[in-house]
Image (cartoon, rainbow, N blue to C red; front, side, top):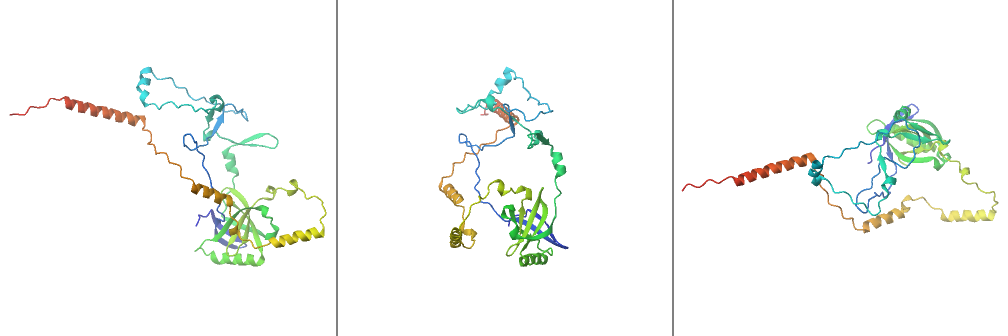
Length: 319
């Protein structure tokens, strides 16, 4: 069983039911990584700024240029020549470095900003956001009951299953709430905080368990008339009857198992048929310079010892 994403209680009047919340869906999307076909290495994303991009706001924090290092003396450079990695050979597709130059940004230098409808840019510090975060809730108070048919499916955001916390005395009140809601044909509306986000929820009775749907808030659902309006066109009774007859011909029971993701199945079939890409041999981690110098010094001392031993005159046998 998957790990619960939330545990707390549902308050139904004066009755408190300890429960746990589990995701009701398990997306099967095939997720790809990106690789460099020239080197076989993973493509990573970094926090960077481009030199050629203009700033969005005037910063009061001075930008400290990276320190410059004076070249080492000639003798020291020559002594370290064999320890340096070879210079990379630019690829024929390399872009102009003056255009692609980027500066890595530390996490502490990143600030969040929002562009308002007026076009103004407002930045917010992490401390300011933290002061507004809602407290994590341990209860879902059912505020009202409504008919499920009154909730347009467009308001449904994500589905969960609600399970009683076993051995906590939750089994009987859980079963009571489930059967009462099944008999009434109603769903309970409440609120709670999941992780750091407040949610409006609909607790609804399923066949054997309670389900929970997080809902979009009223101002998050767009008015359909903003997108399209049905033109005022008259429809004859004959046309309406024929359309209803077609609907009746195609009417059937809902069987979710017969609706498969053909694209995903085809993609998985393609991946199974392709030969696996040959893995690059695992390279040993580069030895730190200090360890390398210590090993070199020990090797030199051992070589000197062997040389001295070889040059030492052997004692003649007495005879």
